[in-house]
Image 1: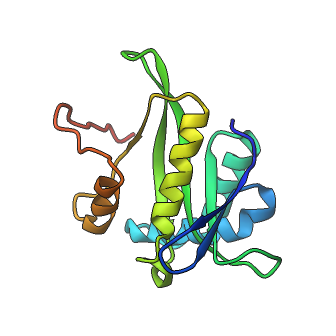
Image 2: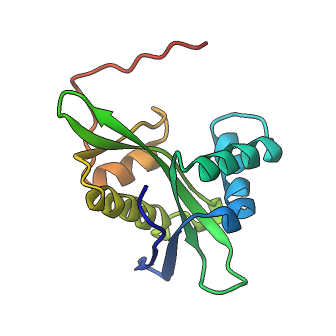
Length: 165
């Protein structure tokens, strides 16, 4: 896993401070993760959100970056992204799956999502990965616009299949 790092990224209107999450950030990340799940029509369940994020942090099975409204002890988490390491057999390389990206509704269109995406890209490059993969809902037009503006291309060669268990 990449090491913890702090980054101060300038958005269009104000500074966005990005850090890699650790257990000290658990409560604030859990709140955002619960809101993220609700965005995708899941019932609110802060306890479940907290348990899930805590397990990811304790097992280091994902990398979570947090966007903060400012530096200091009174900072508030305003967005996060979570990535999982994976592999591409065809390319014989490591890839990252950007599975979660969420920005508090009061902070959207302020460059927070872009700052988080750029930090994820920097981490993936630092790790030697060959690419970042992501999926989004078909009706999530604003996210699609962000991804495409950052150079992500919609897959036109493969279909995605899932088997619910």
